[in-house]
Length: 437
Image (tube, rainbow, N blue to C red):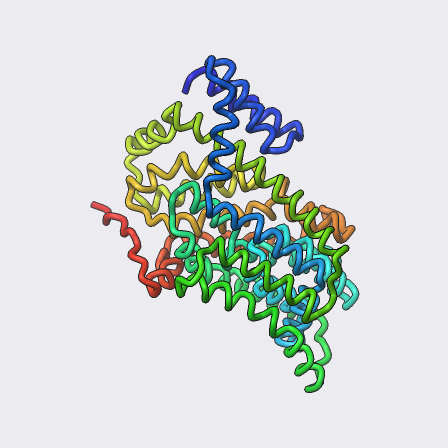
């Protein structure tokens, strides 16, 4: 790299460490680079604006954010939580299982771990603490269950991965289904173990009337993921159009079916959605400019050349990358890793014959684990903020979940068939890595 590039990256990490928002740090560092290299500062605007407004796929991001805000503001998530309680609440540690199942259901509507934690997460923590669970465990489980949201489709991180790597969003969505369900199952196994060890409480079985009423109330909301995913995989709608359908159905349910939504609520939802979209958009804009600079500096090609000198097998490369992502995820922002580091690695991924869907899904799972990994786990601080529980209490209960989640991650890395089986059933032809000599 040139001296200007080293200075750009150095300033970026310095400003990020000092607390500047990631998107602003990328844009400011890029401006310094352009000044030092004597290039037109207009490149900053043209690269970011063209990348943002010429991408039809990226339009899905604000639509899914808007959809998630509607679900939370209209209390649709409360109905989903009640339905999940109907399914698994009667088992020992029932509310803990409900927490996980509710995250699985909500994941089919939001595509965002932060939306899951900020909405259903607070409700789940409050109910578990009230039922006698320790605050630290309640918050830790709500934190780890929230990462299921961006893995089971729809998924905002997978949309962004698809954009920067030119990978099919539909196949990425399908690839995330089984890993997402396995993450939920792994957390349920931990709950079963801890339920016996700590003698967690059980919930009173619901009456038939209550069960029928809860099912009838939740059924329209439960149809949203089925309609959305069915439309995508039948070819009726694109992922972006499916996001618009999801938001429209959510609005109709909130206003007409549940009648728990007013125009004042809608204004608040629009404001919060715009704020969240603005944060993501600025980060994407900064990433697009830095990606242009990275390409101009020929960093991906040089990285690929260096990797080829190491003579790594595909599985060793995946192992090395995932260990790197686990380490970086404890300190760096997920969007930064997704939008800057992944494009740098993609030429090597292609060169080694690694399937891009498999790589993408495992990378997203890895980065979601980073959201709950101390010391900078973003979800930990979010749950601590909305629940009032100390970060130290949450972290103490996190480790057993992290151990299981990381173990499952490496199973997904070493057994690509888990990720690729469902896309193959939909007609996907995976890339097969060449066998070792």
